[in-house]
Length: 450
Image 1 (cartoon, rainbow, N blue to C red):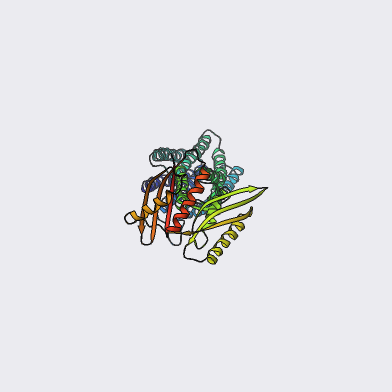
Image 2 (image 1 turned 135 degrees about the vertical axis):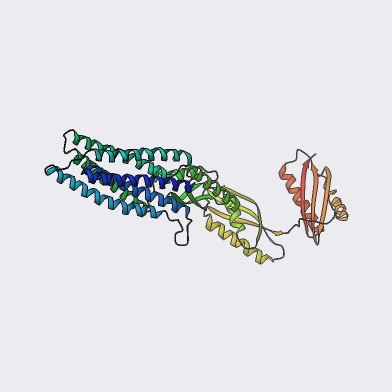
């Protein structure tokens, strides 16, 4: 696609440059200042087309160690130099037009040669407009669109030049100079606009509307809480954007990467010429309090697991309880030190919490692959369960062993009208009794209604 663009721009450049040569030669032969001035406009268009061609070629060249953002700024630099040169030439023709309007008529007036030169340029402009329009529909591209607009402007200026020449043939002998003066002013304005535009591009200016568009796209991406900063710059046809987004502090790394990819794709769907870099930062403002506590506790060295986090407010103060599992081999002193670190970190990061209560538990690693069932242990557990009259039915008991660890799952049925609190307290008591008689057991009781 890039190669097709460069070929189209090469044809456009040759066409408009030929118009510059023809207008300049025929303008000098016929002494038409208007045609000579329009030839300089054609030269400006040639310069612009050459810059667009260069930009299209540079787009093919990948970034290197010295140009990590690519080589697109060469387009802006070339545009500025060309614009300054054309402005100086336009100033000369404005001055020359005023001088000739104040002096007697020249001995040679523009004639048929000047009109032929102008008509040739009109033909070239129409050819370029048709060629570029078809190419834009087929392959698109910012550079082709820019050249398309310049071809239209060149067509308009050439028509003004021919009108001036025709006026001379009807007796308005200053018509050519007036046309040259008008074209000189237009040329000066266009060159100043080109200089201004390229100067701003060299300072990395970007449209605020474009930034707002990117922000709107990112904010509407699922999972994004907010947008912190958006840094954008343009290099040739390519727009580079560095976007920092806020995600919930408890978002996993995989989910954060997924959200970032979605935001990037959403931007590219609207801006195909964009190169996007997404940075994500945690935001705890909208994260539930229990999730914050869980994340802080897990970050402390020595913590093997966190569960049963409960927070409540009383008289305007917040209190939190959590269960923390630590290595079962460490002593009470070491375990208490871990709980103190957790409590300190929670109160530092969440000042609204008045007090933290930590329940320490031993952590047992349950292997994935367990050995065959232990029938002797199952019978022992059944004898323990039979002592509890609240148990209406003893269901399945699965006892699996691995080295010195037992994984025990028990199904028990209770009266369906029993409160969940009563059932919970009873199952906790049973688990404790079993652990006193069966060492290194990891017990899970599943209560069911009768």
